[in-house]
Amino acid sequence: MMDPMTTTLAVANQKGGVAKTTSVASIGAALAELGHSVLLVDLDPQACLTFSLGVDPEDLELSVHHVLTKGVEPGEVILETEDGVDLLPATIELARAEADLLTRTGREHVIKTAIEDLDVDYDWILLDCPPSLGVLTVAALTAATGVLVPLQCETLSHRGVGQLLDTVHDVRRFTNKKLEVWGVLPTLYDGRTTHARTVLETISETYDLEVVEPPIPKTIKFAEAPAAGRSILATSRSSKGAAAYREVAANLVTRSQRKPARPAKRAKKK
Ligand code: ADP
Ligand code: MG
Image (cartoon, rainbow, N blue to C red; front, side):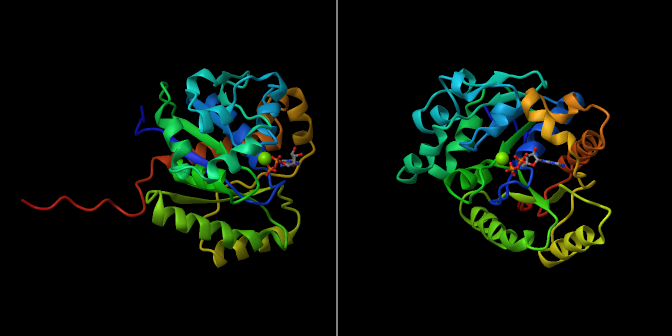
């Protein structure tokens, strides 16, 4: 079943280490705190999201890999986590999915189809993309309502953005007309430097991208969360980082209520 009220957000950037996984875990926990039902999908074979939510990938018999390539029902794989979100976990086996799917018809639609097969209507589904623009990222963008691009505001961080937006453009053209770019989320942000602010302004102007506020400050607290198997919202409840993600989540809720940029074609007059 596919609930039209579900917002599916792909968190994507082919650069590693820009806080995709941290953002998915933290925004997911923040949305759950606000009373929303949330499913997080780990699409990275490194399974960092799975691990950081307290699940050891080595203990799993079934994972997202089985859903995407072997026709297993997602409901058989989804786990509840202590952070109040549900998780479709990954294991290292997912590394093979990319190759397995390459020769398969309809590969761009495997995640969309898995979501349609869910028997729970989630308010939010957050897709934690791997650090590449391969089959899994394209399938995530094909399933998504919107794409959020975490970005570390450093001098060279914009170099991949154009390529990512090219991929988004192709997805819009061929597999998902409704995909919208929700904007960049500044992460690992050091607001004390004017440099970070300048880089952020340059990127949003160059690519005509909205900036999702507030920037997530760089803080050591984030290093501690994954080992505890909880998001920073639980391990460091009143930290600046947790507060920033709560504010981002509230802004995303507002964004989800916005009408699509391009209105659907008007019905013909009778
Ligand atoms: P990605 O999924 O894009 O590869 P991660 O979310 O795994 O990135 O983050 C990369 C590293 O940066 C992790 O060690 C994470 O704990 C750390 N990190 C993420 N956000 C912050 C932050 N705001 N401040 C400090 N460290 C952070
Ligand atoms: Mg990651």
